Length: 260
Image 1 (cartoon, rainbow, N blue to C red):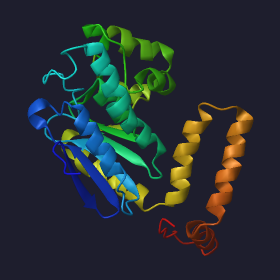
Image 2: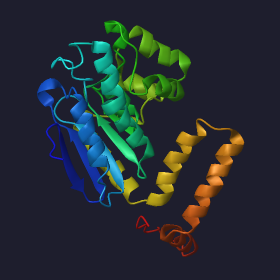
Image 3: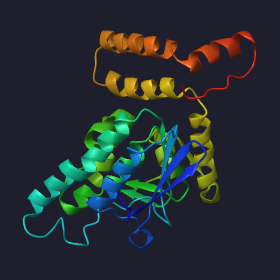
Image 4: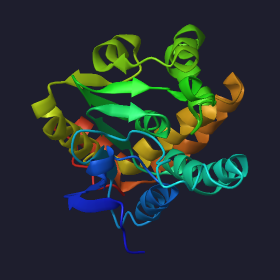
């Protein structure tokens, strides 16, 4: 697939995906999410993924300007866009076998907010904000926001975001635990890449199973969560990284993981 709306790059073992529509504040048509999903299917050995936006925004939401979601039967068009394009990307991120980091400056609004917060680590610049604007235009949250937000910040704060439709700036987002960390704008790219590279140097199988195990645990019983842990531990114990970790521990040195 030739990409029209995103850029892809490799920084060592990190796959960097950038929404590249700065003239639209990276408002994302359905095709942009298709391109992101296609790129995620081609890790080619990458051991972490970094998602960012070009220019002054992360993603200002779905692109409605083209009329594809507002002409004809807008309800049917929106349903199709979500179920066939936007939601499949969110599911692809959830099932990835490697950690995901998002780097947010400016707006992360609507479906862009969901995309940013779907990452394992969201790092935001001081001018970033997170916005569930749907109530302002007579719509409901989407992209998994109604599932995600109460789990991240609790029901009361999730309701504040979704029913009031007000911006949550990075400082408040950090204090709420909505994001991992706020940094200065000029430090964002470097900090996000450094974290991605740190994760990419880790025990990839174990990290992937950990992120998937947390998602499973959110929907399972205590006993089911422990059973999943035991099964994942059995897989990890057979990896070269686990052997290296144990050897390094006994030799009192830093482990050198290969992602295998």
